[in-house]
Length: 486
Ligand code: ADP
Image (cartoon, rainbow, N blue to C red; front, side, top):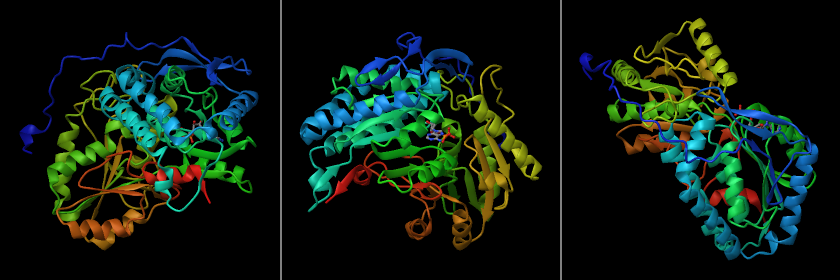
């Protein structure tokens, strides 16, 4: 790209998605036993729009008694209906959920962006369709479990307690609920405290789909609600996606019980660009890997490794591309980077920006990008000349912040890329298939993308190594954590 191109940014007229078709109640109760129910705790909290800081709705804060009601209703539904139903009958319900998500996708996308801050382009084109696809995919497995596990008798587990984070609220709910229902389990799901709305919309969809009461219960609250779910004696399976710290707490608290556990935790993915890579595509992949979705992705390509002889070219093209990124109103169809999910998260990211500068790294932010006055926003940022020992390289920032390191040989980059407590994902950009296979076999990462980044499909398993957790979600592998095989 020539110098003249740098700084080129199209001026688009505002193009916000309408919100009048999105029906959001002023207040939400807990979805227990097929009905919205007042919380025993009598407590609620406000959920906000992180782009404007305005309150959207009041949300119930479930206490231990509420959790007990939800788990008991899931257990009764399991014993009374769900475990007796044939796979083909379960599949009908799951297909129904998938179809209604598709029908209401526009409304769900708007609510996801309103409550989570992510750009509408992401929620409309990725989150909601992928959530529907997940239900479609697992509906297909429900009556074919004996083919998934040949020569084995497949038994469901009972009640699954499922706890999810704020970065992909509806999609994570789909990742958790669809395989659990397909394998004959019932569910109590808790969305993250800051993004409960699409999960509560899903509760309405489940009601519309006439699922037997109690098969899916959706309760809201904070960490204490999650802890009460994990520790409930009637729970047979815990599925958690969130921070490594909470994952470790959960693992400790169920040690010595027969509860099954899957954990999908943090990440700090290496995105590796060799000198024979298609550079322009790689730059687009780097931007997609870390900046889109505000960097709120556990598998974000947050550590860039560039081969030394092309570093200057890649960094200059990356800077030029960053000048064109639009940060702002998540509901605007032209927005590339929406709002950071919460003030707390923005403070955490800003603190890491200070740490990087204090570590002596060169910082680069687009000067062509102004942030809205209200709401929680962060400019996409590069830390150039980073080293393995830097905290911004070692720790998960969960924001649009990319560290850049250079390397000379494949052995060196594998060593550096693996030298981290996490192992969720990685990316490699090269023209040579042999290099891809060499690297993928040596990377300690659950998913390695080659010449692309952040591609998801319900048929492929996803999950981590080391402190990124264990167990797989998606694909045939995603059925295994929800069954006993005899
Ligand atoms: P993040 O940093 O992504 O917000 P957290 O691990 O804090 O990740 O939160 C992920 C989910 O775990 C949220 O739904 C949160 O309410 C829940 N949670 C937090 N603390 C606990 C806990 N001690 N036990 C169970 N769930 C928890």
